[in-house]
Image 1 (tube, rainbow, N blue to C red):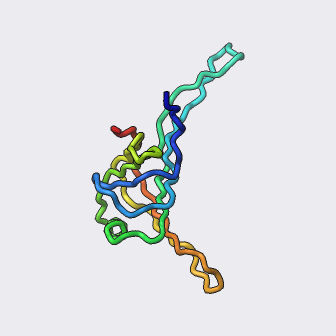
Image 2 (image 1 turned 90 degrees about the vertical axis):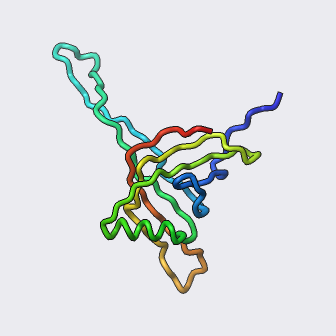
Length: 142
């Protein structure tokens, strides 16, 4: 019987509208947090009740060499007030390049763009970072 190895974090593909876009070197902040509120019941001193208040999602951050024209144009449109929301899918692959898991970041739009410092005394690669606000995160079909 073949042993199922854990999935590795460097085999992934980022898609927008179902099409692969630019090779990103890093995907950060695939996260969801359930916020709670504490309720102290009178006379109960052994514990506090934790009540669910809301779910929050951090901004998705994609980093790569330089953004392609499609993403740059989308970010520019949003900065000019033309907000178009798109789903972003991050697909995790196994060692045989088969899709094994995916996350769908729903109704995303770019909210921040940044480039690494330009330094004439260094020989580093210029990296761009694009941050997306979104409405939620769900598991996609694989």
